[in-house]
Length: 464
Image (tube, rainbow, N blue to C red):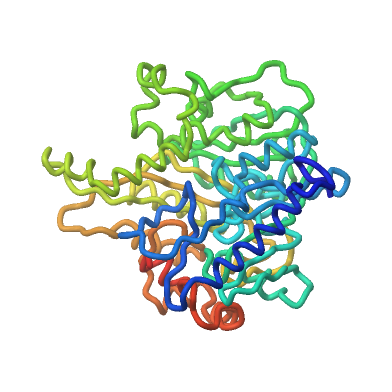
């Protein structure tokens, strides 16, 4: 494997990484027992806001580099805090990309594996953790171990996805890469009926194409109960034209027409980041005059996320709403996976009960036959990830959690799963029934027997 920056020098990325591993191991060992531990991070894509910042900060910034890329083997070794933005910039120079690239630039490799991720290659390539060859982990009990699917830490390798840093922290990952072509040819297929839309998803999962268009990438957008689109993308060596949605034009609005489009591979991978899907409209950035004044370098998901965090901290929006006599609003920010056979039922429910649009729809299927115990999905089953992000006015007399609890109940009723990057309202018993509490307890005992790191329920539901 070739070091990205330089080779066979004392300062090479591989040597720097080895020194950083020893330094963080010592720093962790020096934290007194009983003190809570948190990673020091510049950005976050989580929507579980802590009431305070208690905890000893563990500096992991040294793990935000691409250590090496092997173009022949199509693999990369990457620090756990490395963003996909930096990784993709490095791999595209070799004509390669990760098998699954989550849609937001500042999602980290370690975050996508310990907290899951999904994107438009997930129907073909599964979830990000399925292309991981090896995980180097600082465990809760202070060891540094390398976990693979067939070594003595295989149980940790399988149980690490969806553990959210409660078993340990990812120091490096070795992942598979795939070859790319310079452009992506998109076709947007319109549907007026949810059953027909998800029947098309099932057909694509079987055939690998739709109406003669190869499905290297598949996702969808619902603007209403009678307006849905599946966007099917295929790699291309040519592009009669190239669209740019980082300037005045907005990607999600283009889905409604024209029916065909071309993007560079880099612009395609980050098509959602410029406007945080469609959520930049909350800041007025989609207004022509505001967009012209808002610098392009700040049209990014991490900037918008920081603005939300500031508003949440200081309560500006809620104070303004109260003064204007507006009803309280509930933040409904979730991603859920529903079996494709039940997806039309879920979408109809969501649009009628919650009423938030647009809704992202991303088909996925586990890549292999193996199970991942903390997020138990059935191998071979096609699911649709529904992503919805915003706030909804609460009905009179309703309290915080009204809509989120109803969504949790519907997801369970339809045999689906809910990601844990945002708020959750499960009881402890229900949570562990859904996320394999028995196996989690075994892993926790093996790799964090003293409970130095937070428990998964406490972290993801109670917000500890």
